[in-house]
Structures are given as C-alpha cells and as structure tokens.
Length: 273
Image 1 (cartoon, helix red, strand yellow):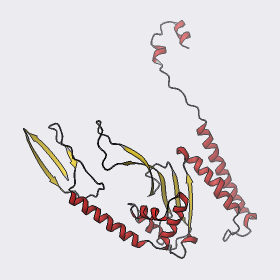
Image 2 (image 1 turned 60 degrees about the horizontal axis):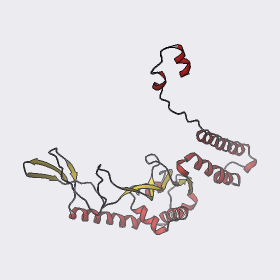
Image 3 (image 1 turned 180 degrees about the vertical axis):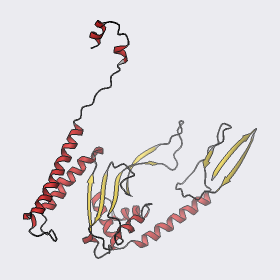
Image 4 (image 1 turned 90 degrees about the vertical axis):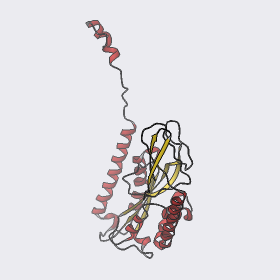
C-alpha cells in the first residue's frame, strides 16, 4: 500500500492504494514520519500477505509437477557438484524467479547455456529493525540461483550446462545432448578459476578424446593438432595475464601540495627534488 501522510496540527490523514507487486516476508513495519515532509512507505495487510504466500505456493507446486527426467538430470548434477541434497536443489529451482529459463534451454534451438551461481549473497532478515542511519543488518549466506551471467557479480562457484545440438532435449537424450561443468572464482579471481578449469579438466579431456566426429584420424589429424595448440596457447596467455595482474605495481598516491607549497628559490626546488 502506498501511503501519504499529511500532518496538520494533530491530525493524520492516510490515503492508500493497492499495489500489484509481490513481496515476501513474515512481518512489515511502517514508521510514521517525524516531520511535516510528505513520506512514502510500503505496507501490506495481513490478508494480502497471506494471499501472496498462497499464490507463491501454487506456483511452486505447478513447477514441481513439471519436474521430469530432464530436470532430475540437472538436479542430480548440481547436487553432486555443490554438495547439496537433490531435495534441496529441487526446492531452490522451483522457487527461482528465472525458472522459465530451464524450459527455454530444453526447447528446440533453445538457449545454448544454462548457468547457476552458488555463492554468498546478502540476505536481509524479515524481522530486522532499521539502524539509526536507516540501514539494515544484512548477513552473507550461501545461495544457489539461476543467472544469465551478465547481471550478478561472480564471486563463488559457477555451474553450467551446455547444449551440443539444436534438438529438443528429452528425458532420453539429456545425458548425451547436455554437458555439465563447473569452475570456481577463488577470492574473486575469475581468471585463476578459468585457467584451472581449462588446463586441468578440459585440455586433458580433449587430448584423450578418440572420436572427433567428421574429422578423421583422431589426434594425428593436423586440424585437431592445430586446434589443441590454439587451446594450449590461449591457456598460456590466460596464465600470463593473470600473473601480470597479480604482480602489478601499485603506485602510492603522493600529496604534491606539501612539497610545492613553499617553493621560492632554486635551493627549495633541489630540496623538493
């Protein structure tokens, strides 16, 4: 509810209109303004909160009904990779506001990738009180969520699924058509995580690959050798870039004013130098 409080003498008049947006939380507190300045706040009646919770529950159960072999394959890979139970992963997925991206990933010529982040996210307690400065107590908490990979900062673990064709993903072909991978962003160092993933997982897997589809001759084929050389070179460049960044020189900011403030004659310049 959008409320406008008008203070006139000792009288308060409140005008309210209903909002159509959904919010979650167990308790909401409205604080009346101390000054005569018009304030805007958000407040929902207990009936509205119950109705929103009811709608959220219905949505989750509808999504749960969609869980088939395809979803279970994704859930099992995620559970194995990030050390959560399959029940926990399922509950997280059906509660995610980007749930529809999974179905878009399964459709014919659908999304080429499906990305999950598992990392610390600031969580605000529903019953947290405001600090004197107006801020609230936010605590970091591990969270698994679906992402497009372009809006949230990556600080933890990235789990991803990649399609190998444009075919419809079904329960019978999901294990052949979808590849799963993970890499970690240790202490915010995404280059180190990517370098480790490529050098320790992808390159050894590629070099042990026997079937290269239409390209015959396996590892002896010149095209395959050129490709593997390019991948090795990329990882080497990535490693050099990471080391250059880590070993970069930090120049200390100097307050020039204290050195030039009283310069009056050549000897002062020499001293300052």
